[in-house]
Image (tube, rainbow over all chains, first blue to last red; front, side, top):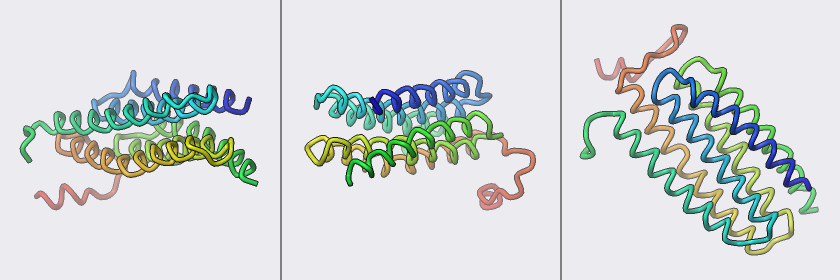
Amino acid sequence: MILIGVLIAIFGACIICAIRAVLGPTAPDRVVAVDAIVALMTASLVLLGIYYNSSIYLDVALVYAFLAFLGTLAIAKYLEGRGLET
Amino acid sequence: MIELIAYILLGIGPACALIGAMGIVRFPDVYNRIHANTVVVVGGAILTMIGAGILGGLNIFTIKAIVIATFLFLTSPVSAHAIARAAHRSGVKLWRRSVVDKLKEEKS
């Protein structure tokens, strides 16, 4: 029961972050907001895995965190605008 | 005893997530919002994961949750630093009441 309350609070925090992702003035603002949403979604996947007593959610959470990290680094290199060498 | 620790962590985690989300909305520029992003990741996500992992006693879920939390804890500063450097190099202005910009002094 406490896990459902924690999930609702985390989804509320995701919606508040999505406000900044929609109306952020520059591109790094949106990247920061989406990065926070990804971290909260990883936490909610772990909570769902504990709630349903199923181990596959935690594997999905690990892969999701890894791909989000790679995507953030790729977007940062793209915004820097100097190619991928340095 | 371990359930009490789990309940305390599950209470602190969503509170930190909500406070950090409000910080992301209300802070004035990108570099301050990265600071609020750290509150969301470390305070919100990692404490919630560890609290949920130790809620039903110590088992395989605890180990997997701690592995994911360690991964987030190690990769969050790297991505924050990359975004901050990219923002500074692509010309995002600081807030008008910021007092010092060491990276700009270094480059000039």
